[in-house]
Picture 1 (tube, rainbow, N blue to C red):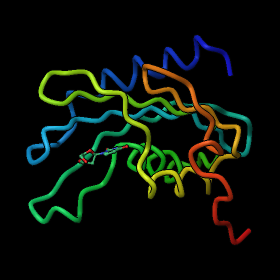
Picture 2 (picture 1 turned 90 degrees about the horizontal axis):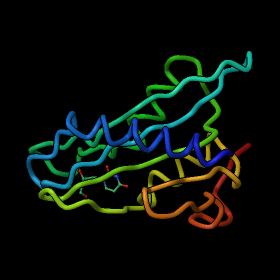
Picture 3 (picture 1 turned 45 degrees about the horizontal axis):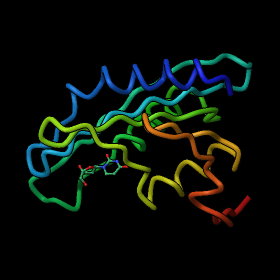
Picture 4 (picture 1 turned 180 degrees about the vertical axis):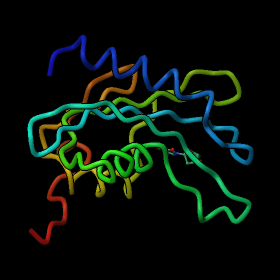
Amino acid sequence: MREDVLYTLYQSALSSLERAYAPFSNFRVGAAVLMEDGNGRRRVFTGVNVENSSYGLTVCAERVAVFKGVSEGFRRVLALSIAAVEGGEVRFPTPCGACRQVLAEFSDGEMPIYNGDRVVKLADLLPSAFRLR
Ligand code: THU
């Protein structure tokens, strides 16, 4: 994956931050995924974290972005970027364990993840991901 693609994804993730719904943690996350459908068409989907008064119902930005793509017919994640701010300070998170497993369902281990600081591949974050198929 070209570096400029990852950088552009990071800009999209940054732009989505303002739409994060994070009144409880004040940790705002924006994610942008480049996805591909069965016909080779590619599209970027963004997501933000969506918190809830019942805390456990919170959904991370990464899963929102991936599920938006899948529900539009895009089942392959080619690259992901995540941006985050906490109380005005820029943060450089990596996806949580649940999001790693969801990402593994729709991408291979080489899939690059850029958090504004460094690029890692999914397999480095989640070796031996569980798969049924
Ligand atoms: N969060 C994400 O959206 N993505 C991550 O990779 C880590 C955590 C959210 C969940 C919650 O709304 C807030 O960040 C603090 O955990």
